[in-house]
Image 1 (tube, rainbow, N blue to C red):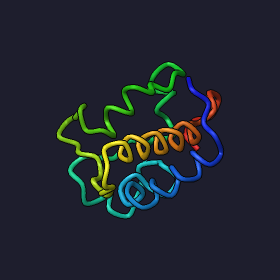
Image 2 (spheres, rainbow, N blue to C red; image 1 turned 135 degrees about the vertical axis):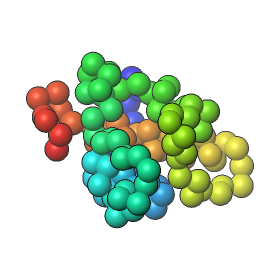
Image 3 (spheres, rainbow, N blue to C red; image 1 turned 180 degrees about the vertical axis):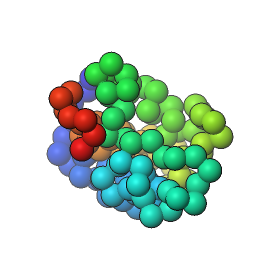
Image 4 (cartoon, one colour; image 1 turned 30 degrees about the horizontal axis):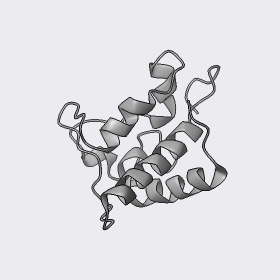
Length: 111
């Protein structure tokens, strides 16, 4: 698992708040303001590693954010419109850094 800098995590948090929090909630628990209007319950993003036997599935999360891996019709937020493909990939790295940073500790039962 790569190590992310504090700056990457902070920028990822800003991106998350701008494009993900309405559905996934401010803290990633799937309890966002718009969650009740969706056909499926947004997953608790703090439990990604816990759902994967303590392992944060980095490539799987990158694929979901990059929309190559769709699950049950879920489409990730398309809030970014950076001008270049490389910026899209950078923003995905920042979001992954933030998601990695909010994973519950193994002993936690959901934060």
